Image 1 (cartoon, rainbow, N blue to C red):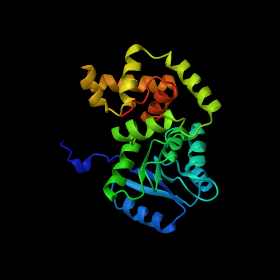
Image 2: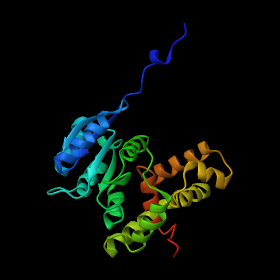
Image 3: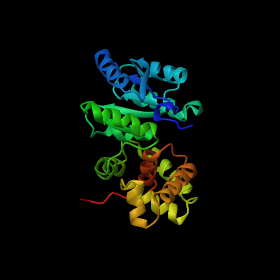
Image 4: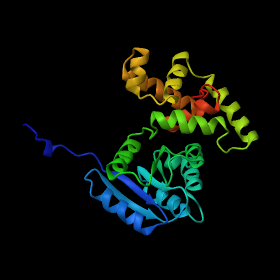
Length: 242
């Protein structure tokens, strides 16, 4: 018997947790997200501590997290979510008033999958949720080459001792990568997509994806955003002067 598209089971909607101290903004995001058939809001929090509690209770796919909040801020909450093994599949997208600032690198270090300006268009916000839920990073090539490279080159706000220890740890783990995995990591740090890397290396996108996944596993990275940070902090990739 033939089955029409409506007979096939639909994928579970992307579960979204909204975190912002401004109730009006949360309400606007909730209306927008709930209007989409493939996603749903499973909770709202007004500060970081509540966000962590709700994340543990509702197990969202994606958390839209404001960085600046009174009390426990978004960075601290993201660190707690990233450190919880039970929340390993939860992706955090940081919401910032200004996309280019030192908080972005701190957010990536804390475990965020990327960032989005609060002034983003509705379609951009919805796309960001879908991209994060799929396990990809919200890092444009421009952001990767410019913002992240610049701040990591300056220490990204970390004290010298912490930065040195982090670099040493990453460099040690890099030794576990194959030559091809290191090559792929360099291209990831440059902001290239799997298709873009495949074109450069003359291999299939699936092969690139395999190398990326193996590199993430060996380096203990949650996603591509973490790979970019590790590539710069370890010294494997160094920002070029424009």
